[in-house]
Amino acid sequence: MSKSMLEYSKTVLKKVSFDTLLFCKELKKAIMTLLPEEVEELKVWLESYITDKPELQQSLVYLKA
Image 1 (cartoon, helix red, strand yellow):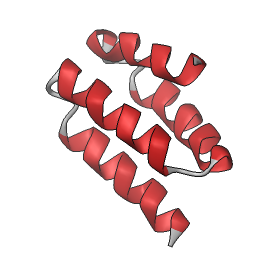
Image 2 (cartoon, one colour):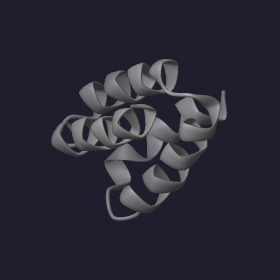
Image 3 (cartoon, rainbow, N blue to C red):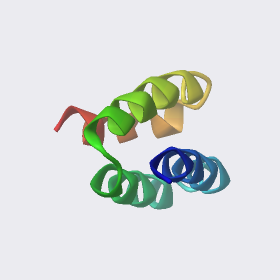
Image 4 (cartoon, rainbow, N blue to C red):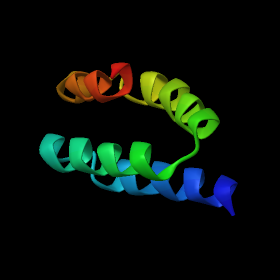
C-alpha cells in the first residue's frame, strides 16, 4: 500500500502543479503521510519534475526541513 501512496502523491502533485500554493499544500501533506524512504523518492522525483517549472522551485523548501 505504501508504494501506491507514493504514486498517488505524485499523481496529485502533477494535477495541482498549475497552482503554486496548492502544490505546496499537497506536497506538505505528502511529506507528512509518506514514510521517510518514500519522502526521499519523492524528493528525487520532484527535483526532476520541476526543472522546467520555475514557479514551483520554492516547493523544495519543504523537503529541506
